[in-house]
Image (cartoon, rainbow, N blue to C red; front, side, top):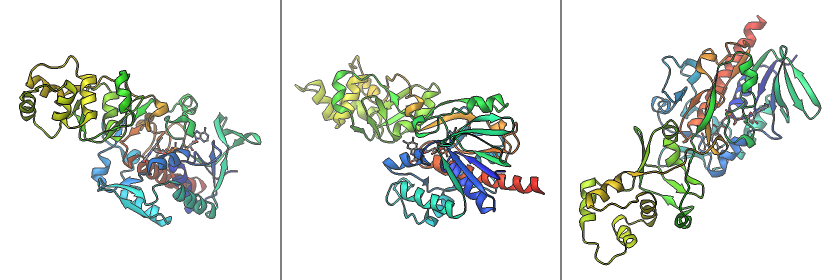
Length: 403
Ligand SMILES: Cc1cc2nc3c(=O)[nH]c(=O)nc-3n(C[C@H](O)[C@H](O)[C@H](O)COP(=O)(O)OP(=O)(O)OC[C@H]3O[C@@H](n4cnc5c(N)ncnc54)[C@H](O)[C@@H]3O)c2cc1C
């Protein structure tokens, strides 16, 4: 009989497998794709932001559980706020333990010196193999059959009946990388509460007018996006599809949940001072050249002309428009293009050990649970932490059933 089974070889599943193996158990990892951790590798394409170098309480304030409504009164294991807490310092020590040199950027974000995820993944998978963990790729879980779990494999359909299972199947964004949320109905049918998946950390779709095409790929710097109570000063990019990048992702959950979005093109200048600038005589300058002179950035002028019409007539109205330019977007990008997802296995469907209440002996970890956090290293850190938490709890479960 299989002792411990982990399904899903992303950061959460690999960490759960490591903990089970460390506790002396025989572990099989079943992974649907031909190779492990494809989303983790994709994350490394633009620089693997492993964690954020900040104290744990500040770090944890970035998480919300459920529908973006902050933390439940007792997040327990769901947010690993107990003995298993695996925060930024632990992640850095763990990566260094795999021989990966790290650096911390000016905003506290932590990256491997080489920026890529592949050296870390290679070192990790080979350590797991040395520990005796068996990785079976092209093993796609298809649901339950009695008390067993059914897989499509290169050798046909297989049934496994492990003593303990950790599911680490990921969320629902970028499904082509493996986490396609196909498991939702199987667990729901077994009585597991699941919140529908929605995009998180995504761009906004914009149907730009023709003249905006020349700005595609241009960064928007030193501007602030306001969405409800939230303000993002981060940089973002004008793309063919709309607005993309960290500055937009930071407020994307608020916008997804209905907040109006406006852009402050001069966040470091008060409206009065701005109105004084707009009161100066325009002379013979065209509107475009006049705005470029006042705002000093052709990208900002393009945005003002795109979204600021009809154009204001008084200096005060110009200042107000620059400080609060309505963002005319067509909604968030879909799950296919979101960095992560919100939704998944509900907080009240698991115990503090991340064991499914409806399915004892089955533990869950990672993005398949209903929490969300911004980009900036929060996602990977928390998937690793939950993987560790679930793996340790699964090892304790194995010891207890054998006693
Ligand atoms: C473009 C991009 C950039 C990102 N950059 C960063 C970043 O810099 N920093 C950061 O913190 N986060 C980043 N993220 C998010 C981060 O990669 C994810 O949050 C993280 O990988 C989730 O880990 P996980 O283990 O929960 O799930 P996943 O990494 O999605 O792994 C789940 C695994 O389960 C497998 N699986 C699914 N269904 C089945 C099945 N039925 N049978 C068998 N196997 C199955 C999948 O194939 C997959 O390998 C990025 C994401 C994207 C898309």
